[in-house]
Image 1: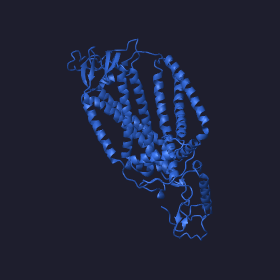
Image 2: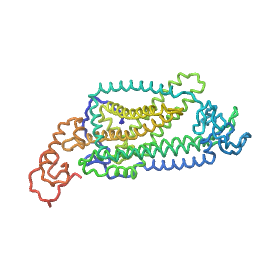
Image 3: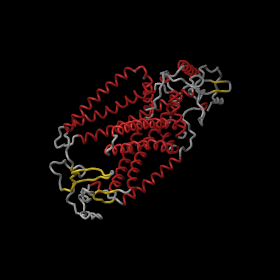
Image 4: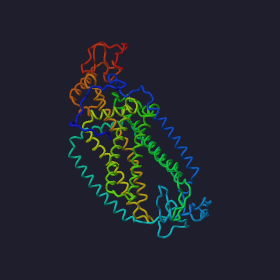
Length: 550
């Protein structure tokens, strides 16, 4: 959820407005409407990146054949189930394998990430092999019973840890009252804006299209290369330097575009929830989801590209580090223990830094949704808000994330157990975990998509809560927050008395005297929002309206 900061109090103390904002806090009345395009340079970099990806895929298509990956190829490089042309320098290639449609894989390894397959094309899979899976005959290693027992034992261990974490939550229950208040406010925002639940559907569809496009491009890239025979007599397709670069280029493109899709969803949700939070009269809310979509597409695609670029780069660095770690483990090193310790330490640091970046970017999107500033300014503002105001955020994040994780784990566990009961007695099912694994993956994706909406709502409400405490004091500058959140603010009793006074004044005012239902206006003689009832006067419908701060 948010970034974690240490603190010693459960309450947030209102402070003076911080300088450095383009829009001052004295005239803050909610989400900023006057915006301009932010971080255009990174949007141009992203478009140029897509152009480079297109050229790389063209280069791979010219030197590859996707049927090699779809149908498989034997030790001579001939594709199974198709007539083949001879390869240069491979005298035994060029066989007609139209009737041998399956590839019987005897061994498989990698030569510098290039697949080296020891297999032959056959008419049907041998009896000691599995039924055809993607035109491949595979060796059977484990039974479904063993896999089921492993899953049940792992589930029992997971239950033990869940009970342990529940006991910890019960022990610190007095410090997580703010979490419950944030969950209630997030629930109110989702109830007020049900269109928020449509956002994960579009995001899921976009990610599915992205996965299909990435897989199609990866098949072309992996099939490209120059046929080369190894010392063992097996043919593999060796890639030149440019094709190896394109392989990582395609992986990085998938990471960047996927993070961009998630960033768009976060910014849209943050904009809608922030608009809801900073609207005093919820009946005049309008359509904040559509307004947030317009802001994101029109003004902030560059900022989204910048934030998603940072996270994608961090993920790529971790992937490259894991690849180098496997290379070092396979090599004969004299200091294997020292290398293992260093790699574990670096992996831990990279993981922590990636989580920090994800939290920072997520909160930066919230500030972008509120103020419409660029990414760097918004990230700095979010970090200041959390550092100055987010006392006991560790408890908020740990408990909130744990509750949301329980929701996801509960959905996946229920789907897996129901799948086991439905499939275990089905005749002819060899790999019981194949359909169950697919169902579990889809269940997790669906649960994660919808729960992530609620998670982003909680983060947005919390940042808006911190902004409200930073800008207003609850007396001459009334809070936007609800009474439930106001209990966690220092000097909240004075703010609650001031709000009660404003409510009484609003009830005593003549009907239709003001257009502002919360009496958030001032005149030349002083503030009218201090809880003091307005002076009596004769009301005339044609009287000029009172001047307001806006």
